[in-house]
Length: 374
Image (cartoon, rainbow, N blue to C red):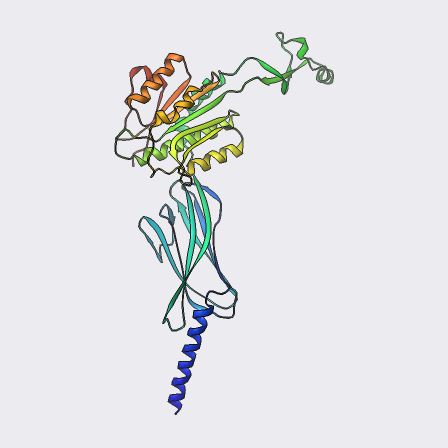
């Protein structure tokens, strides 16, 4: 009789817990995935916080957390994970009643990109592991990984050469409504520019310095088209790094920069371009735009893609073309720049497969950028 009562009690316990888990396991249960920062630079380490909260009386002794993200986020803890085309995580945990658990998952940002974790699955079993239930949760976790800045020790001479070319394009006419500062009077200064109040204070003649009527700007054209059917991922990524680094460097010098490209946005699938601007906010916008370039999408031909921008050049623009593509259509276009005396530089990223292969008349405008051997 005692054995029968025990068996009956066990059966009732099993049925009760089975009913409770099937009906209530995901009630007041939530998961949150959050990166420690909204943005990073490729090569940096960040943390993904995995937080599960169980706000009810029913404990969950067997709970799995599953999510998928990019394989370019290299998690240091390789347990409970697998990597194929993507990174798959499957953590097993036990969470008691009214408990909050947070795990810190450190990872390396191995590559520039825009990364999203759209959802996570929670998988629960009852105490006797006789069934599994799954619930999917929206997480909408996003991370920008910016291109890694160039080593400017290698690029310093070329950059200062371009910077000098940009600064020589400054207009000599000044705008009387754009005040820039005060300096000592020089013999060639007009008496109308004397600041009498500042002169009286200092005891020597001072003149107002006005800004220029037009400001020079840099237009960077980033071409990810390839000469061959083979993709050169190393050259694509290095081209993007060069564009990001140059735009940031010119903006730090007070020179507005714009970027035009034939690459496509991973979100909108449209071609990415950004108009001229300056300041820290513009540098951030450029980095975010370049992070969103999706090199897996087909790239349209470069010359037709940016032809209209080439037509609308101003005498005040300095042009930088970044392209390891060197076919005749591009070289003909750049040769026409030499005829119209358009100021430009052509940066050609190279590796062991791709070398500089340009006509002689373009050689003075070319800056080779060799990738280090692996």
